[in-house]
Amino acid sequence: MAEQEKPLLIKRYASRRLYNTETSDYVTLEDIAGFIRDGREVQIVDLKTGDDLTRQYLLQIIAEHESRGENVLPVNVLNDLVRSYMVPGGGMMPQFLQSSFEMLRESQSKMMENMNAMNPMAQIPGFEAMQAQQEAFLKAMTGGLSSNWSAPDPSESAKSDEGGEDLDEIKKQLADLQNKLSKLS
Image (cartoon, rainbow, N blue to C red; front, side, top):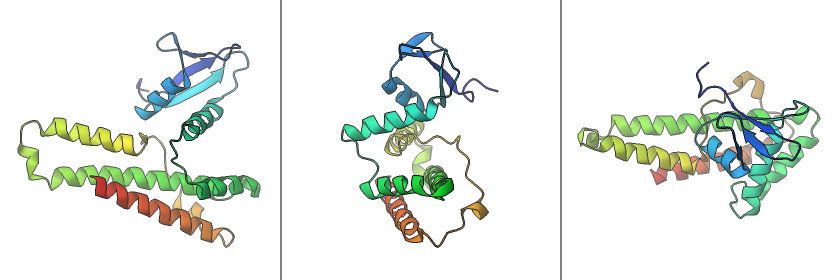
């Protein structure tokens, strides 16, 4: 397995300090968020127990960004997430979110491909640097979505009668976000 494909192992010590095993130094939550924005997967484990703490720390990163006013998730989406925890088995929300992010990544890739294929400026010297800046901008706008996630089987995400209106609203919001993203480029 290539070095970039392996998750970056972060160990949490009893003092709650986080230790990057690759660089042999301590890191902060903001450092971990930076690794993820750069497309790197991370795994955070408790040194003493070996428990995987990744989910807990990723949620903490999101909560800190939201509390600083970097509101990415609308209140109605947060309400839907809370509701999904009340449904036995988690409901359809995890599969829906995973499918939505996969669709967003695919749209981003297609948009970049279309920009390359249809752009006569591709022959101009320095175009590659400009294209790299556009890709970095799109990555920043989409929160650095990694292409390492896999979409669930579409047959598994059949719409249920219960909560269908909520899913339709979320789909509409996602489509609106994709339209805004398309207009930005």
